[in-house]
Length: 279
Image 1 (cartoon, rainbow, N blue to C red):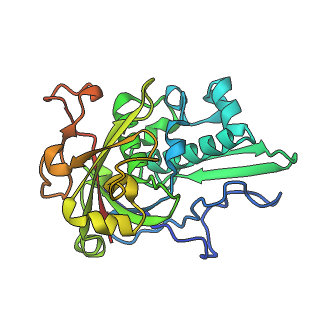
Image 2: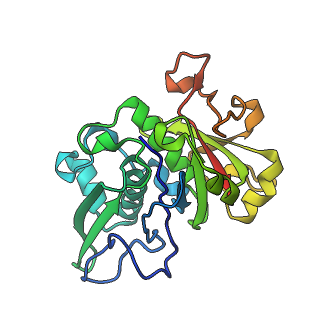
């Protein structure tokens, strides 16, 4: 599979591929990304604005295909709920769809807000890390790739920052000169599994670029100065990537990081790691 660029623009862009709501009113999901998908150059550039509180809202999503009719009644009720938890569940679902599905795939549904207005949602794929999730439950490999992507796209403040994701999966594995020039600074790496009964996410950082990461609001990767990973939900900052992961390879990603919970027998390391570069 060739690697495409998925470029998302900020809310002031007037053209969108798929509207997030219909004509029944303004969306509840304030702060979500208005996304335009286009082929620019060989990389995956995506916004991150997933708040840490949403990282555990996926519940049993992995146990069924990404189709509302296939989900458990409890999962459907959570997605359709007008409550704050419903908002977090939809936010998780939106980012999970973006991570798992490709740009030709989407998930659409409707829910009713507290005022009785119908809200229409359509979440489009971006990265294509587990496109088969649309037709079958998400397997263990897909769970870890999607989890790493969700970790990479998390922002403590819900602030949109464009990032470039690298990894060993085909859709992540190659970046051309234009992408490397646009995103030259390694922030760190992300890995874990948010779909387990006891979900976990880990991250490490490049010490040389900590100040840059913090200046863009990427505190859940670099850690607050003197504050560690406070307010980053289940995300655990493990320290410099040099102490947790194998060195960057030719593809500019860490091929493995310490994760004994992953079930990978290769020395307690997991290969399902996403390395992030910043502009």
